[in-house]
Length: 161
Image (cartoon, rainbow, N blue to C red; front, top):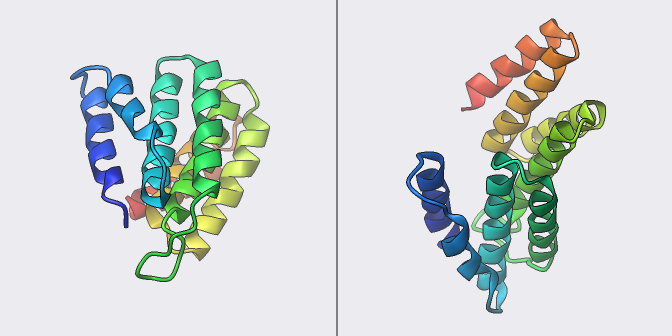
């Protein structure tokens, strides 16, 4: 696996803790070529997308999400389990897309996408991604008045985290 995501995750956590703006340092991962660099660039673009989403800049969040999707589809490396190294990344990009849909006022489409992501992530053994999608789906369901469904998906998220 590419060592980039650990460093990128560390930078993102620093941003969440209020210890600076992580966008600038993350952008350095978007340049360069090669498969390993493409995976790092895809992760960086996905994280930058999430940061802009948290800052409320939906257009930039969408733009970086498109970069992440393009970069991730350009990679095809296999990990030790025989899956593409970016399987988690691709599912994560879908989660980000669903969150952008939700924030943009399209909660129905976001819920449908999140439900599909939860199912796919569970089938592929990606429990962290399934948990992330389930927690966001629970929010969508609670806002739409489906308390029982929200509790169910929240329980799934809690078990996965």
